[in-house]
Image 1 (spheres, helix red, strand yellow):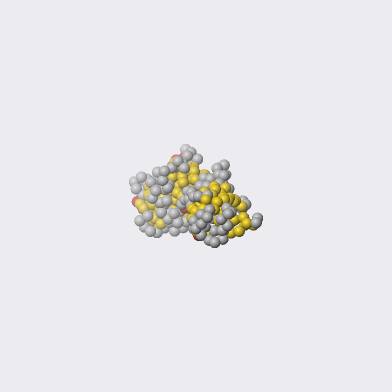
Image 2: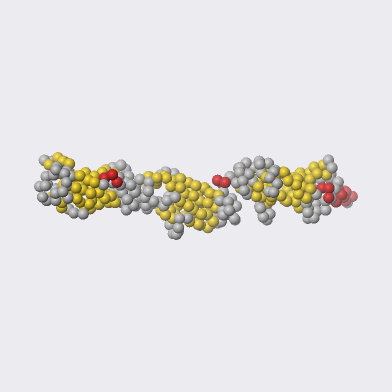
Length: 355
């Protein structure tokens, strides 16, 4: 009982008398913890975005004497205390033995080391800790999946039909970031009205949306973001390659032409699945079969823009105002392109001539 009484006396002396004994556990003199900005949740990680603020809270015995109630907070890695603009800050503990400081995180992903200390005479007691910083690109991740839910790692066809899935995972602060906003530079989100899609996260902290790819060849940008004041996001680039036709349909305004006439030729490039990409070219030829050989006849106008529009259509004019016709023979119009494999896709029609 005498030993127990002596120990109690030593602890009381440290707390009440201000006589700081080297044999006492420093955690009993001062204890530092890190909380979120509101000071409600203890944390070990923060976002290294140059804006996020955490709360450092040091606790000392509530009845410490006045000479040992000033707490000195310090931080590393260019973290700055709010209202001070430096990595050093002091605060006097209140009647409850608590001193606090707000610390702004740096724009970095290296840890921040923090400490809180009090001094009494020649004795300094310090409590230390660290904050793991999450880089701004580590808050939310974005992955693209194909129709079989496999990751996409190659260019896709700009066919106006292919559906891909944008799948986002919130990696940090999931309670606050419970919604993901998806954005795209092209394409159409499914079951969503508008250019953006806002989705709630599920129990796995994931959210997803389907996107129908456009018919425009090139690079599109897809983004998933969280947050309201400060925005955290990941962006992915996806290259879209040309979707070529499998069939060509030629529809002239007339199947009969006279001399010095003009015929509007509508050409449709179609696919077995989806649509042909916009600005897909085709070549046009006009000829007559003379003695078993193809002999060029007539001319086209509008070939400079002979590429598909958004409907997969090309329109040109065919004219019979040249002097290289045999009006006893039909003229053949042939249109040529290629399919996705590079094989030739071709179609032709015959137009009768009358003098």
